[in-house]
Length: 296
Image (cartoon, rainbow, N blue to C red; front, side, top):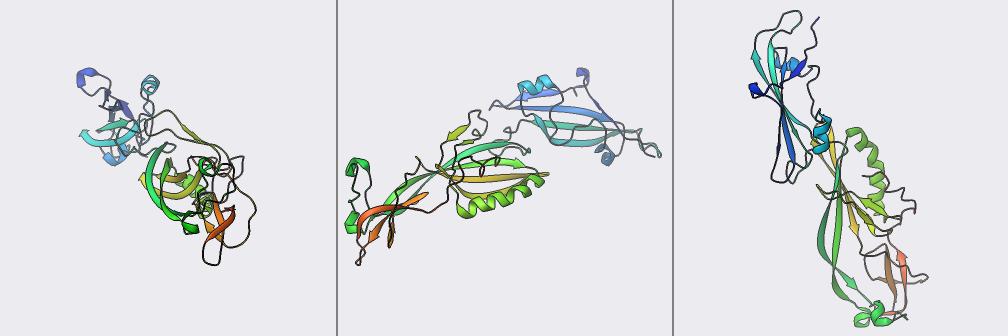
């Protein structure tokens, strides 16, 4: 029966094959280690005991303390010398070069590791039709009697900020997540409780947003690496919590896109009149935050 090959780490500096660490211009760490494996068959090297595999953390705790997240990102195998015993399939020698990097060390696209997460922010401008002026500075405490252009309204540009939360998952976790994000995206749910988003890429400060400020907008994914699915949660952010107004019936004119859209009664010639009402356009999640919990 063939023996299990084993890997030995080169540590002798005189060989030039000892472990090496280097820091790039962005302050991120990389490392290289070389290993000697007692088989001449490159395919058998893959099963060698002690040889680091893709995604394994660096093997020394003090190095990991100084370079958090340093993991295997590549393994190169080459025949060295000798030949294997026909029975044990060991006796020859191969070498393996193992490359390590921190998750953000590859530039704008982080290396894939299950559990990794970060947030990016995007800004855009869109236009919507505004039918009445509800600014407190203009109308005071009410009544809401400032229809624009006799209720015909005017097109107004609105700035929109989106948060894109990335998370690397195993395939099993990805499949388990799908029913939840399908429901959130279908209804475009607004958060009922405060949320904490992961830090920006390479950062350490999370971003906290209040209740009824984030709307689950889109979901996407990519195959980031072996066994790693990179998920994108896209949230549309409002500057402040929406304020609801209650109680109105009849034909309605939308005021803005939000969790609560404000409307006016519409007259026979299309003009707006009377007090406005806030109609629930998008559902607001539970106040315990259970709908968004565990997404990242």
